[in-house]
Length: 72
Image (cartoon, rainbow, N blue to C red; front, side, top):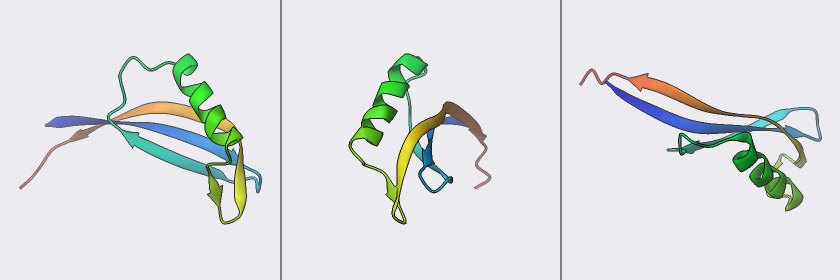
């Protein structure tokens, strides 16, 4: 069994919906102080536009770990 981790960053869009970006293999030592400025920078540069809706603010960020058991 292997454990896989992803950093999930959720952004609030200007159409009142959310958009999630997942990055594989985050450092286990990441903190709010590491992630929030990056999310704010992405928003400031208008790097996220989904169906014409722009990211307005960071909503959440989490490291999600999943156990994977290969059957074949």
